[in-house]
View 1: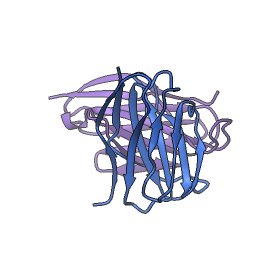
View 2: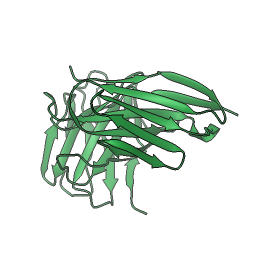
View 3: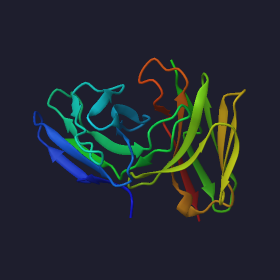
Length: 115
Length: 113
């Protein structure tokens, strides 16, 4: 089955530690995205990538880093510089974006709690 | 500031009722998405539309470009429809991550049997 996988579903880390969230897709999509969701707020874009070896900052990139070495993988690292890392993180992918946009497919999400 | 407003924030309905969730936005868009998020957190794309109306099963999405407004309707609602429904738009010109989706805060729907 084609889809997006994120692991783990729940993640706990101590304050000050970097942590990497996994996102893998087998949909052959060019574009991938990382969003953050906080209670009572809409999803906010952290980083996105439209093609391998290229990525762009979203609206809230500070304290995060990404890589896109393979088409199917787009890992997100939450660094110790991120002031409020506890949140629900969602990965998504789509075909290469046209002017009208394309449907995004979402992963199941990772809930990160920093203690 | 380009925002997406949804109403109502919370909605409780009895099984079988007709449900409407509203979404309004501020300036020109190239596309509007309706998404469904279940309690476990996973998100499913329901519709992507830029004009008119789309229907899938008991779900209907409409958009009025002139009024900058979209509605999501659920006919013959069922407890399994209970979820958070999220509206997202792709603005034509947005000062931030240009061309990316801007999300509403969601409408939490609970359908009672």
